[in-house]
Image 1: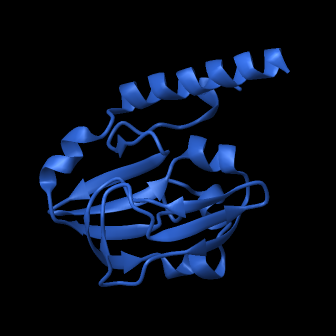
Image 2: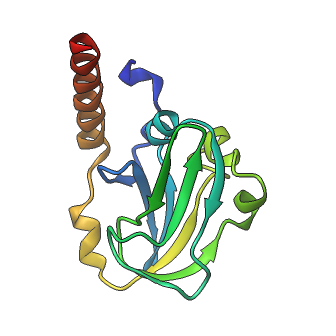
Length: 143
């Protein structure tokens, strides 16, 4: 795997669970990064939290399933879900096809703006991806 294979837009924030966050006027849009969706594989099913749900940073509030992975949707910030990408529930492949555009997952009205300070910058996220790739190579060499 090569780092330059994955787009890491400069105008977003990131977390180590491969979510991106785009702030806008007290709300954020949250999605799965290009790297995260490529590791997970083709997304086959999504369960997104309903509008009005209070989500807490790092706590599971939905699920993402692919052919090789099932995981919980754990937003990197806390707040109330104000919109879900219902198009993805009908066609989850949008997560893989356009992770930073039409593949967004949920919009959240933040309850604590300071949580944004805990997220990674694009440069720090690139470094994190590099570390994951290095670990993957080391593990493959052991096998």
